[in-house]
Image 1 (cartoon, rainbow, N blue to C red):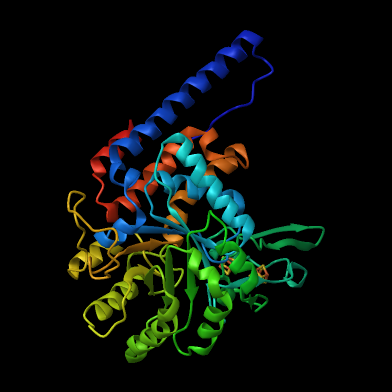
Image 2: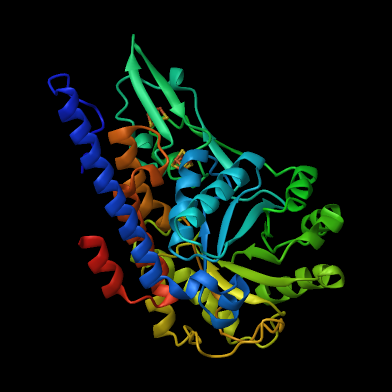
Length: 418
Ligand code: SF4
Ligand code: SF4
C-alpha cells in the first residue's frame, strides 16, 4: 500500500490543498480506527496492572531483543505493542534503547490512555547467545558470492552492495541481535560472532531510572558463581524494580536444582516478584510452528515438579502464534477471567500454572513487515504519523497478543479490514 506525500508539479495549489486535506482526513479516520480497536478489543489491558496479568496467567511480554538496538524500530514496536496491551517490554540494557521504548510507550498513551507496561532491561552473567553480534569485513568477501548471509538474516541486519570491484556494507551492528543464522551459511567462513557482557555499573544506573521497572538476568544455569557475582554487584539497585526475571535454558535433570541454587542467592534480598523465563529454543519463534515445542516441553517438566522454587513461570525462546494452542493441549493454559478477584498484594506464584508468554522474533517479524513497508514508502518515520500503517501493525499485534489475552478475534479482524 503506497502512501504518497509528494505533490505533483502538475497540480495547481488548490489541487495540492485538496490532496493534502484528503490525506489528512484519511489519517484522521485511521487514527480513530486505531482508538476503536484498542477500546473495543483491548479493554482488559487498559486498566489492569501487569502483576495481575501474571496472576491470571495472561501476562504478555514483548522482547525487543537483548542486543537489538535500532532505536527507531524499537520505538515503533513499543508503541504498537503497548496499544495491543502487552504487560512488559524487554529491551537491551542501554540508555538510548530504554529511552526509545519509553518514547514509544508514551506516544501510545497519547493515542489511548492505557496503563503503562513495565520496562525490563536484559543483562547476562556470562557468555550468552543473546549477547553477541556478528561481524565480517566485506573487503574479504568474494565479489561473486551469492550473499546467503544477507538472505538468511531475519533482522535485515546485513546490507551489501557491490561497487568498484569490492563489496561494501556489512553487518548493521545496532540491528544484529545475535541469532547466529548467518554464521553457518557463509561458504567462505568469513563471519565471526563477538560476545559481550553488559556493564554492571551502567545496569545499576538504569535500574534507578523511574522509567525502568524490571530486570532480566540471562544465565546458563550450569554454574552459579557468575550469577552470584552479578547479583552482588548490582547491590541495592535491585531494590528499585517491580519484578526480577531469570532466563535460563532447560539443562536436563539439574534444572530444578540450578533454579533452587539461583533462588537461594536471590532470596535474602528479594523484595519483589520473581519470574522464571523458560528459554526453549532461543531466538527462533519466527521460524515456524515447531520452534515453540521446546519451550512448551520445558514448561511441562517444570509445572509438574513440586520442588521448583517460588516464582512465576513464563515461556520464551521459539514462542509464536502456535504457543498458546500447544499450552492448551498440555492443559497448561489456565487464564482467570477478568471478573475473578485476584489479591494484588499476594505474591503467590501458584495463581496460574503459567504466568504468561514472551514473544521476541515472531512479534518483531509480524510488525516488522509493516515497519519495513512504511520505511520503503516513506523513509524513517514515527508510525503514529502514518496511521494507515499503525492500523495494519496493530491488527497484527492484537492477533498475537490476543492469543494469550483471549481477545475476541472477530472484533479486531473486522475493524482492521473495514
Ligand atoms: S543473521 Fe542473526 S547474527 Fe547474523 S547478522 Fe542477522 S541478526 Fe545478526
Ligand atoms: S556469505 Fe560470507 S562471503 Fe558471502 S557476502 Fe556473506 S560474509 Fe561475505
